[in-house]
Length: 279
Ligand code: AMP
Image 1 (cartoon, helix red, strand yellow):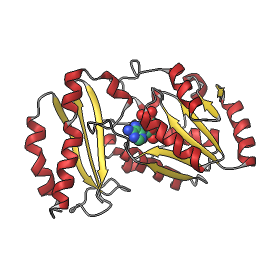
Image 2 (cartoon, rainbow, N blue to C red):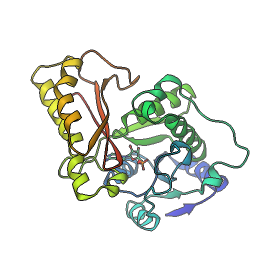
Image 3 (spheres, rainbow, N blue to C red):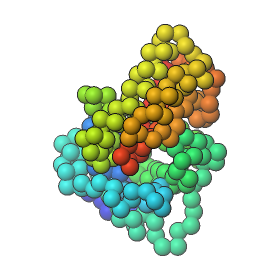
């Protein structure tokens, strides 16, 4: 696996790869876990060449968020990507990605202000901007993203469509720990107690899935059925419980097949998200 630090070299190598076959891109912020690796494996199985990226994107972090303490485990990330037979790892410095004097940003509009975009103003402008840049830099035929970040996926799909990127956005299923908690680089922040409290996220989703299987479809009724538990939960602060269209992120009246049910909240100072698509 070759590690590339500059945009110029990455573009030169990407052009070469593109001439030989299909290129799959897996953008990450590092601190890799099995969730990231599932994207890499999917890309490996579907593309001739795989490009992974590790970049903790300052533009998508709010002023009071965890940019400085975000986990950075570059050495072990490289070992894992090497094992998965990634061809190129693009890992630029922030100054390389955002050269001085750069002013252009990508704003996807209203969709970027929904769900996490509502509680993290500017977050999805940061995401859309960096992903658009990575698309131009790696020139992939397919780009792999996790369903775990469902709102991010909707934003990226919107951006790729609106800006005519000639590529397919591929969504990959959420990888969970044995106890049901969705894997996340931020799980490293959790104390033992906080990790226990965090299980309220997947448990709420499981409870809602059961209710839907039992025939309850009304979004208001479904949300009300969990609210008291969520609001009364110890060591947990609910951000949102949303029943929405997965493409627009707008609320829907009924949870029908394909509906996105998403939850976000803070446990011991760490913001976590989770979701499922109604089957
Ligand atoms: P991040 O490094 O957190 O920006 O994530 C990089 C990519 O990995 C994103 O497309 C995420 O949606 C995806 N991802 C993160 N956690 C998981 C998970 N538990 N299961 C599947 N994909 C994930």
